[in-house]
Image 1 (cartoon, helix red, strand yellow):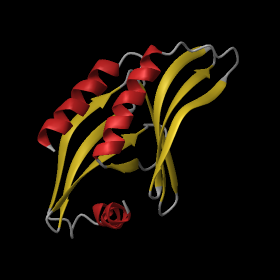
Image 2: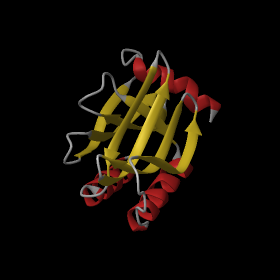
Image 3: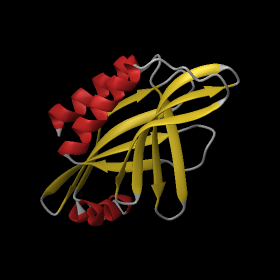
Length: 153
């Protein structure tokens, strides 16, 4: 995992990467964007998951290994099936996993009375970037993007 984190730094400096390719993309009704990227560095291939929220600067990226990718897929399915019982505005973290300078989480949220289920990526490299994407109406798009990334990666 440590080796992946070192190469993650190279992801940000794409000049040194031998190949950076967007594998798949999806979005939610709120304008948030998610994408999976293949990054090849020195003969090794990594999968990056990026989130971008339109009202926030930057983007947040987490590098996924096979185990974390499978866990994210499982936790997203569990989140989709879980009822959102929040009575007041706020967020409840359902699952969270650190990966180097980043963290990926699933959350239940309620904002101005609207209940949502979210994936969040928080990146703490060169500043803090935290972006979310809703799975409520885009879960099937998320699955399509994830499956395409898995087959190409």
